[in-house]
Image (cartoon, rainbow, N blue to C red; front, side):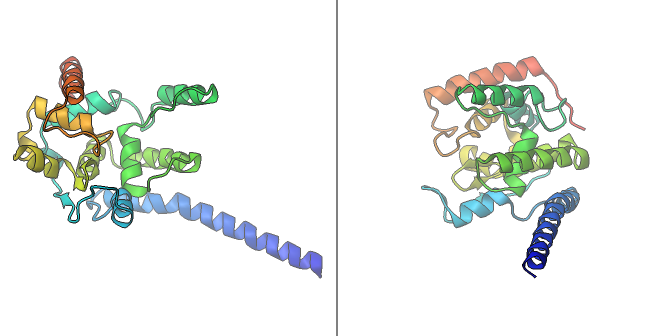
Length: 234
């Protein structure tokens, strides 16, 4: 009887693990397909901020969704130049950069990011802040789904609409209005570069008033933008 109970418990556990695995694989597919045509009304990063607001977070977050045609090409070029210069060519993951990070970590070297714009979109929309390897692996899986289901233009559109450009300032339209008093479509190269520079740490950096670091980094981004030239997204 005891053996029978053990077997029954083991079978239930296996069934639970299998069903959980299926849900974790299939659910992102459903949402990726849905958000290909519907703009996400809320996303993981925003939910986390709402329930666990960092210091300085706005009581009433700013956000206005805009189509990619209403975003200055300067902004698109700036984030590619600053965040992920291989974005038009890779399939969601920069394998060479990821492998280097893993090698550095194995050697006890300094931790640094290797997230592509696609991975950042997957993290911001579908996941919550966490630094576990399990979440990172899940992020890679969703990033591949985004590349297959959305394409580069949609990934960029969603990324620039959900990224946090300051405490509770979501999306490039809200950021453009807040910092410069203009729409995202009117951003100059310099303004776009400054917004791109603050993305890694919008709680410690802002495009105005200009600090020495943001100024220097913006000049670097502008040089990269000029080197990259015109970029077309599918």
